[in-house]
Length: 134
Image 1 (cartoon, rainbow, N blue to C red):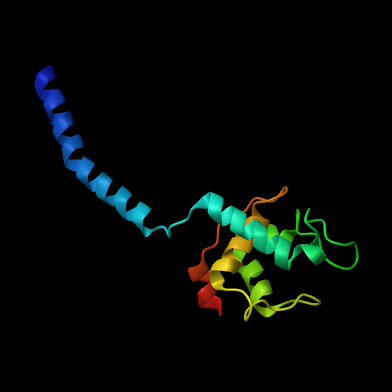
Image 2 (image 1 turned 45 degrees about the horizontal axis):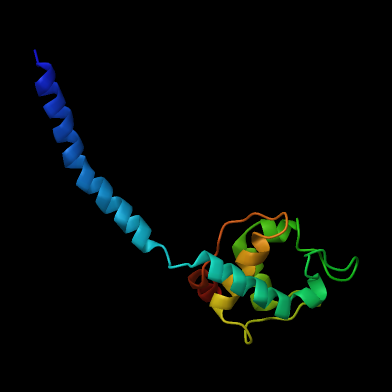
């Protein structure tokens, strides 16, 4: 029969042997993420949107009825970030391709802005994903 002190020692030893592994995994996960200054990225995305997209899609994301689609609560925008990236790369209907005029980093900033502004909520996309599509 283990004494209470022995039981505590056993639990402490188990924790200490797992702690470095947990720490290592956490460090690997955090360092694998691309660096992102969220405030700077959001401001850049908003600026790029206003400069390149708002003329048609409007600053409030509501678009122009029967001419340019609303981006707010739009199923393409709230769907996959990859689909939105492909629209920017290839163009669609009246919308031109931004492939030659906007970097992958800038595209990611715009996509993340429109996917997380107004009533939209979407996962972030990174420049590396967009570069793989070009």
